[in-house]
Amino acid sequence: MQINFSELLKFISQNIDAFSSNLIPLWHPLGFVSCVIEDIPSNNTIRLHYWPKRIRRVKNPDWPIHTHSYTLNSLILKGKVRDLQYRTVSGIGKWIYLVNYFEGGSEIIRTKDEIQVIIESDEIRCCGEQYRVPRGTFHQTQVPINESAITIVILSNYSEEPPKVLGDCKLSKKYPYDRIPFDQIHFWNEVREALNHHLS
Image (cartoon, rainbow, N blue to C red; front, side, top):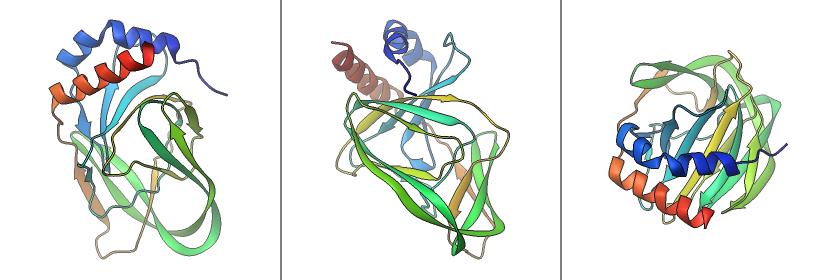
């Protein structure tokens, strides 16, 4: 079921001056920039995601296939993204890591479990399109390095189960990632332009 983003986009547009002054975007381990929008009149979490052109800051090692502890509904505000979703099968292939959050960052911790994944859907989502990733579904989102994209996401249907990441078995059992700030002025200028284009 798709979500109607219209009222949410208007709300963000009307309050963007306050948001751009108070909300700091942070680099995400998957290489894009994420900013949580607070004070939304809703029980859900709202975030803006931005893939800057020619620059990404991915975690090391770069393992992009992961799950969420919530359902994700996304609207493309600018550019296009490749939405890959997977189904799991038993077997030896990728190790399951659990995501642990702490103040200022996160880490992934290797479990003893291995699994294989097979592509279930592979879609290019263009500006103005919506798509959904169910809670617990392994997926990844790709934006070419020479392109930029902005999405707004609504996170709902939370569970207490930690997110998972699929990776190779390395010597270290933990991989931390510091979520450092991104250029606040640049981020909000890009968001403002995308909103104006989408609402015009």
